[in-house]
Image (cartoon, rainbow, N blue to C red; front, side, top):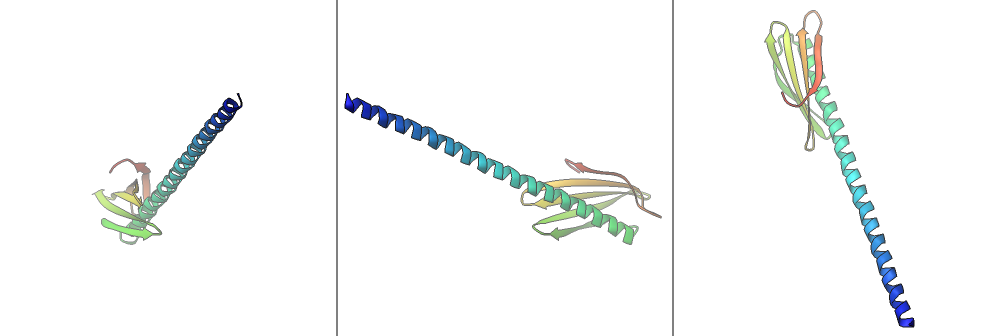
Length: 130
C-alpha cells in the first residue's frame, strides 16, 4: 500500500509540473507575440510620420519653386521616405508620399488645387495604393 501512495504522489507531482510548464510556456509565447505586435505598431507609426514628413517637404518644394514636379526623398532616423509631385494641370498638384521603416510601408496622398498665391490642400489622406 505504501508503494502505491508513492506512485500516486510521484504521478501527481509530474502532472502538476507538466501543467505548470505548459502555463509558463503559454505565458512566454503570449509575451513574445505581444512584444512583436508592439514593435510592428511602433514601426507603423514611424512610417506614417515619415510619409507625412515627406509630404511636408514636397509642400515646401512647391512653395519654394512654384512649377515644381519631381521625386525626392529623406532619410530620418531608422527610416526613409520618398515623395513624388505630379501636375494635374493648371495649379493642381498631387503629392504621393511613401514612408518606410524596416518592412513597414505607409502611403499618404496630398491633393492641391491651388499653389499661388498660397497653397490650398483639398485632401490629405493615407491610401492603400497610389
